[in-house]
Length: 185
Image (tube, rainbow, N blue to C red):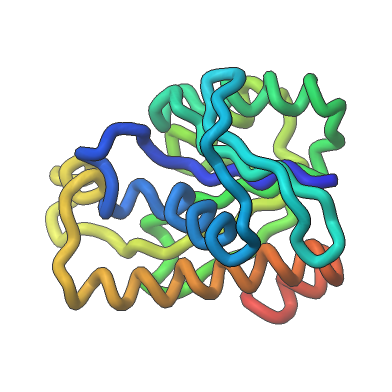
């Protein structure tokens, strides 16, 4: 069994922003595998189903990005999950738009959602899929960049990254994290 967590912000103002790439991938997985992510528990929306013969719980924390760990730790404890079976999907400014990076473990970097997860899980040994969003031209404008709206042209590029992230999740579930890293990094 796996917890698959997409990081994002819950309000409609944040939909279609760079910071909601994790939510978007969860939505794509939910649609593809007919999993309703509408139940509410532990400050998160979730749904259960099967992907590549593995039972999964798709989760979209509703705590806002910076408090994502509060939701995830409750799901981890409830399902008695090992960290290796928690896959976290999120946006990353250090990855080129439309590209992804799959990692077995690691620190949170500058991402506040990941800082919250590492703080609450007290662990860095969980797989993650980083979806590239690139950096703003003006580094003083980071917050507006991640929560600002996206042009149609850029949306097409980011959509490709989300589609690759879906494939990376499927590969992890089917053949393991190492194969997914080799295939998509």
